Amino acid sequence: MNKQRTLIFIKPDGVQRGLIGKIVSRFEQVGLKIVGLKFIFASKEKIIAHYPETEAWFRKVGQRTLTNYAKKGLDAKKIFKIDDPVEIGKIIKGWLINYLQESPIFLMVLEGYDCVETVRKLCGETIPALALAGTIRGDFSHDSIDLANEQNRPLRNVIHASETPEEAKKEINLWFSQNELFDYERADERFMYGKKIS
Ligand code: CMP
Image (spheres, rainbow, N blue to C red):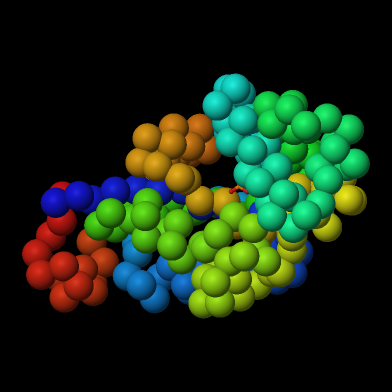
């Protein structure tokens, strides 16, 4: 069976707004197991390594921004002075590097059956204004891309969650060492899954 691990971190807006407890309980109540956690000031080097330094990542983030501006009838060029998605992605990464150092961040490794997808679902859409009610971003923020960019800052979307199982492995290895991750059985597992998942 497909036991997976994934990584989340609560960003400075979530930490500063006192949302850590509420967010942790969202994951616990669906039966996901906490196998690692830490509360740290992230180094610039770690943040740079966390968000891929690849053209594909810059393009994805930049393109999502352009699409959102177009949907709202806004001109992205007014804010960014350029309309190349890759260059826009690079600007956003620069904002993230500064922003994520403004406060401690709260990281967790969660484990469960197909949990990468479940955790993304619980977090909701990247853009809080579009995230459904009931999701973490939909319930705890209503930030939008145009407001964020007007202020030269990243979206304050409360939480980061790995997007794919491969990304999860990379991110867990980046932020956690093996001796900070725990293998143990939680009392409710037998009742949730019927038998032990592996
Ligand atoms: P995250 O899930 O951490 O992955 C990339 C982050 O970039 C995303 O959450 C947002 O915080 C940020 N982001 C993506 N697009 C934009 C944008 N257009 N403006 C500001 N921040 C953005």
